[in-house]
Length: 164
Image (cartoon, rainbow, N blue to C red; front, side, top):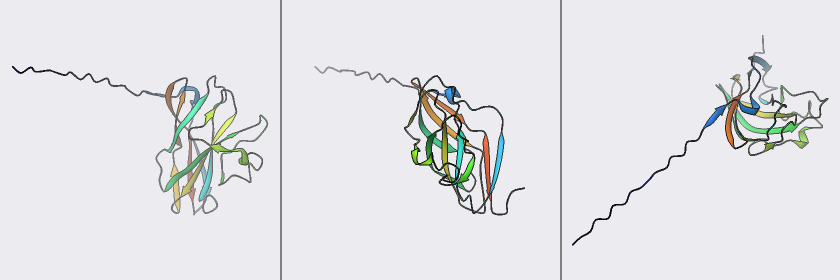
């Protein structure tokens, strides 16, 4: 006599949930910055992270939004003293604007930003032609065990012909 043994497999699906906004939700409003090439062919793009956070955040990824002729080469974090000016756009590395702070920059991916610290994300951009642009950067991060995504609201255009 043969016996048939049935094996039931139970599959448990774990859904990964990404929430928009969160502790790094950027202020509303769209802004545009234009800078000349070739000076900014390799540019440092500063993203001011909100400082009123009550939770530590860990940066998981940084990606360009709607890039045209531009790539993200790296991302760093800089902690600012209260009275220091903030970076918007400069040649990379931003040693002219941040000579005292740039040496303290750390790689952003996998780094944790303590709650309340005044920190900027400095994204290294590289233009690949006579005109390059992006609509900001998307930042994926974790806080309090949840994954969030937010987007900067500053679009950047770099052009050889100059800006109007």
